[in-house]
Length: 272
Image 1 (cartoon, rainbow, N blue to C red):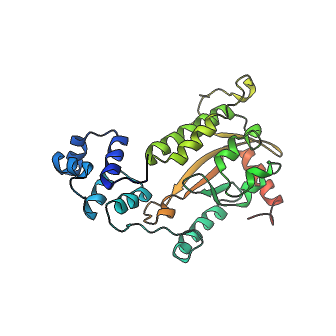
Image 2 (image 1 turned 45 degrees about the vertical axis):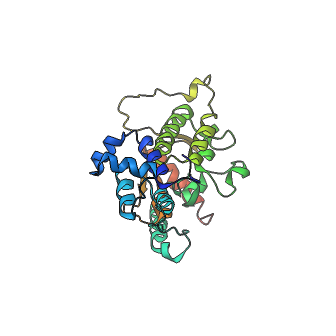
Image 3 (image 1 turned 135 degrees about the vertical axis):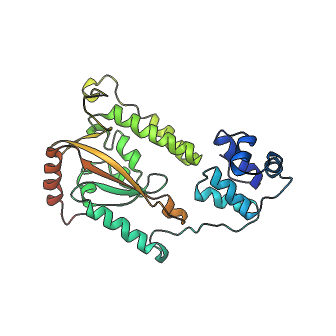
């Protein structure tokens, strides 16, 4: 979605079309007349601050893009944006750190909107030995790190399945945000196709009793099996905080739990 030299009406129309809504459907949901919405989109009327916020809420526009529409309409941004190391986000940053550290001895990390690493616990770094250094240079993109041939890809035992899962999730995020940078990342990762001839890396996609897509990873001392969860700040009104997600990996079997206990104990005192 374009972001420059466009009116608020242009942006509202683009978001309406992106959400696959007609003018009549959006007008009905927003409890305004279709004629009024048409005037706003065409630029014949300038939306008030309250109207921008109302329509953005109906369209589920991310906070970053809501600010852009407000500015295009001649209003001040509604949502602040601070770096994680600024005092305004100190309490939230401390929460992130507590969640990551509290998840030990299992891997957990925090990423921003573009899947760039913001923080991680010791268990994450214990699994990254031997990774090509250029993939660990800041900003570290954790999806690229996981699917790149010089990254974790050779160690992922269900690489084709995991790539499919990652790309499906990324496609959903592109659809929600309409962000061209995320779309470029999706295209880049889609080109990293695993070797389809390697049948040993293509386990039965629907094994009996499985409840979620796992990550099967070759660890230093044998195969590891993880289930992942995602945590976000549900009431965030800061742009940066609204885009932070914590990815936590839980052992899917007792052997993984045992190995991670031993591995994390051995890496104590390392990176943080």
